[in-house]
Image 1 (cartoon, rainbow, N blue to C red):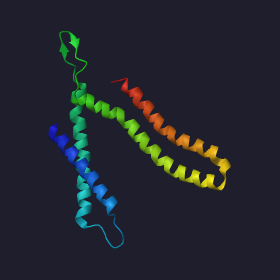
Image 2 (image 1 turned 90 degrees about the vertical axis):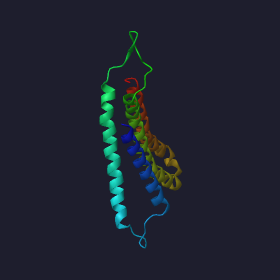
Image 3 (image 1 turned 180 degrees about the vertical axis):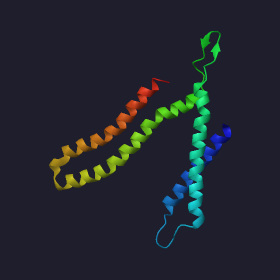
Image 4 (image 1 turned 30 degrees about the vertical axis):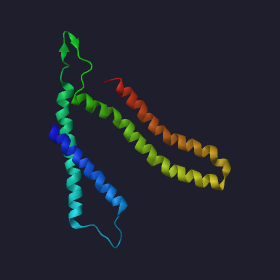
Length: 151
């Protein structure tokens, strides 16, 4: 399990480093992608996905295990890999919903600013549309709070 988590961590760090490098030095018409680079990106992402599924399937056993009993009492303060993965699962709805809200607010905010600059009376309508887009993140937070009660 430790080896799988290390592979997952190094693959994630490599993906972040590669993305940062390409953000700083993007490809253009003069500078094209090298042939080996495309293969390394595919290998890095496939390693990440395989390690993620390996961690998931190894963690299922921890989730399904019975809690240890200490003198007839269930040890509630015990923290295992399964509980950690459950917390990651609880965080995913907020993470994905926040990302989706950010993707929605960008174009809506730009269009709202353009509309307000032409007609200032459209300010109220633009706030409604921005609020609807931000509601996506709030829904994800509510789902995470509801899932937190199940752990």
